[in-house]
Length: 437
Image 1: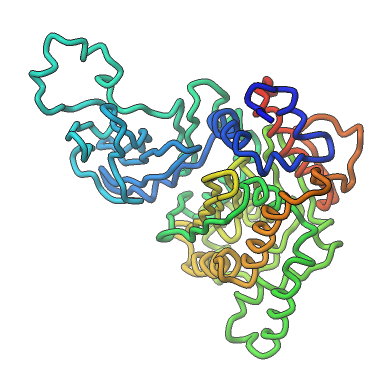
Image 2 (image 1 turned 45 degrees about the vertical axis):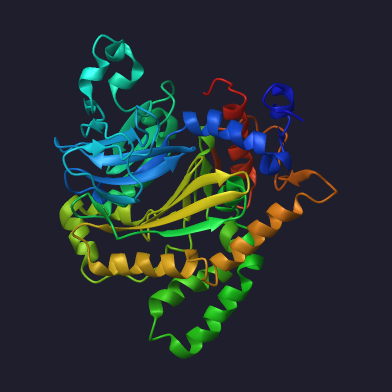
């Protein structure tokens, strides 16, 4: 079936309480996601601390479009397409570096200023008395439709038209405020590189799993039980690791009581009341630093917000404690790149960074006892959905036929699959080009 020219069939892939397997398996649907959903969404590019000096850059791919984030000479952070205006060659091939005084194409040596405007072309006289000055190439490098730096987090929207960053993300931006405000200076610093894992599954499998509070009890049973056994012997040697792993074994009731909020455009906050991160040991001197920097009332509010996961749909999830974001870069219908970034709050004790790095290694490394469980199941799910049988993925847990369209909702029971149904209603809205609220 061709979904590109059959809007009714495309819309029918998601129903109120179920999703058709073609949403995960069909290559045409994946291309439509890149063109419609991802190109109109705000996607995470990088953090400004990754480009501290003039001409520093990082290169990433947003919805199959390669881009460069770089530091301009005026101190601002710019984003341009990693595509020469002449014949489309990539200007930079490394993940990061410094371009010097200009961007120079390795193919025909066209050069560009750091803002993307055309600086020079070889054999300039050969273009005299042509229409070169009026052609698109003379305008320099293409840029995303919109770029915004929010508290150091740089986002881009590929489409020229769409919501502003604040309109699109709305109240979930408080999670980025919380992360930055955990620094007595109000700023974050990326801690080195990231853990990158290519998972052979559709990106939506990972994204919906971020809000699945039922799976840890069974999926990560061996990780929690192993941590408990090791803890009996080595509790004093690595207390941080045990603090981070043992809560994965908490029962259904624990997860159900943590609370969840959903928002328009598929965003959500899981763990509005508490989470597995709530009861970490205090860091000596840190609370006093925060009280001095922000006052006791704000410091208490910042440190008291420890959600399980905050989803910035469709491609990012954040944790305030530890300070970690996960970014999904879809590569194909059945291949997804996961990036895990750890941040150090500037001016805060080094134990904050140590805690984040430990969690990242224990939980998100593909060889960890936690991530290995998830990756195995995602990849088996991707393969098994092709088999004959029921073509629908069930999302009926606590379904209410009166729950309405996707958007704002507050639920005491975090086991309610409304939070995942909310994602798919936002997916349908974006894919069928319906007007967003």
